[in-house]
Amino acid sequence: MSSLASLTRDLVSIPSHEGESAAGDFVESWLRDHTDAAVTRDDHGNVIAQRGDGDASLALVGHHDVVPPDESQVDADGGYVVEEREGRLYGRGTADMKGCVAAAMLAVRDADPAGELVFASFVGEEQGGLGCQAAIEDGFAPDYAVVGEGSTGYSAAGVTDVAVAHKGRRGSTLVAEGGAAHASEPDAGENAIYRATDAVDVVRDLDFPSTTVLGHDLRGSVAVTEIEGGSAWNVIPERCAVTVDERTVPGERAPLDRAETVDGVAWRVDQDLPPMACGDADFADTVLDAVTGAQDGAPDHVVKPHATDAGWLAEAGTDCVVAGAAEPGEAHTADESVSLAVLERCREVYERVAETWPPA
Image 1 (cartoon, rainbow, N blue to C red):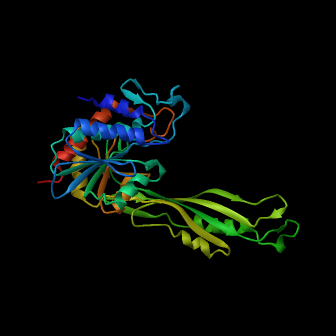
Image 2: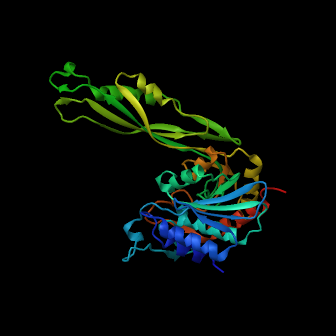
Image 3: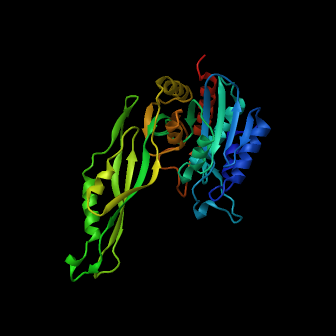
């Protein structure tokens, strides 16, 4: 029998920041060897498994790719360093999110599912959800999903909550075009930086988008984060580009197209990661009941500030919540780690939800 700590350690030790195939091989082989699930590996590298049947399907969703590791997280042979200290497992991917992938694998093995239980570990989440998008295009469409991204430490330290919504991210660029001229004769040209700053003024005056999800307020943001323009100190700039970071909320977007009312300014969207909102209060409450029963704390429904694959699933029609072990600030760091006790809690939660949803 695989313990959660050893399974997580084995999975975390496999490098998966440049290529996910080895980690996917491990997940696929383990599921074939230790469960009676029907396991598939699609053309994109996603690992998907199915157990049980019923009128509604519940998916336990994660990803086995990671961001590039810090030098301290790689050993001399190129493998990932994994260390256990004081009840925590340290290493790239422990928190984001191989620990909860391992917890979901054990839940798939051990649960007596109430309906169709689906497991999915995607590739390319750190590249904007490429694997999840591809799976959806190929027909992946569970009715419900628990996405194992971090939801611990939001309502109180150490408490695992249930995120019923999260923000998305729309990254875009405002490009101002002008006309070059010698700086000693500025009126002979059209200063692209001036046009860009006029567009920035438009952005600065925009209201932040906001909405309410299951009684919880979710407020987005809009911020100019980069500006680039000009070619020399004595040349009127003919081009200037401005980067805009927008954190989106379900159903609302900031009207960034208003910046195009400035002469010579065009707006383009470079990345659009969708937000998530759970539309089924009963499902959200069922997961909260499971989380409450698995710990001593008093968890709550919360909202997350950043995008996950739950956004792509929700956009495609799946009712999602996020429930996982990672705490704010743990992921993507040189000392990334996860609490083994909280991982065990999440394994219990996933198993409980699988055995109670959908309701009879």
